[in-house]
Image (cartoon, rainbow, N blue to C red):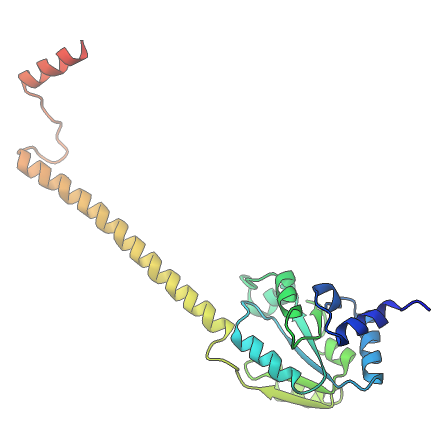
Length: 231
């Protein structure tokens, strides 16, 4: 009897078959079927969500902590459109495809699925109905009231503190400061070169006894030599 596509997805997920195509489930209908199979098999499902832009060690540690709460970790990743809506027009720096590929390659992550711009913020949570919903302490989207409301769709909610001394926002702030500092140095260099050139011009004018900007007058001997060289 042939294996169904969803059964094959479950098999690849559980056996940790490497490859983006074995862990990225973009279709919510397929995701729902896969989750049902996993739950029926007794797997404890953990869900977390985020952008994961400029992936850093704090992200890695956070996902490893989230995975330790169960058997299967599902990561909902904000699309580029949703990221711009939440974080501003200059984000993300890493495209959705790049972020998904990075997450799919991590041993702690079993399933990666998108979160879309027009989806309700509860949509993926209500679809997955995880045994454990993991949130970051740095996430401001979900209020305490939201967390209470979400308990009807989750077995438990865990809030993890920042897992490193840096965040994506802190990294961006440092990059911007470094960029501003380098730009300031370049501007100073250009100004100094410009002023240095002007000072040299002024110095030449003073030493030649010729007013600044006045035309240079050739001597008769110099003029004759110039004419002979052209003949």
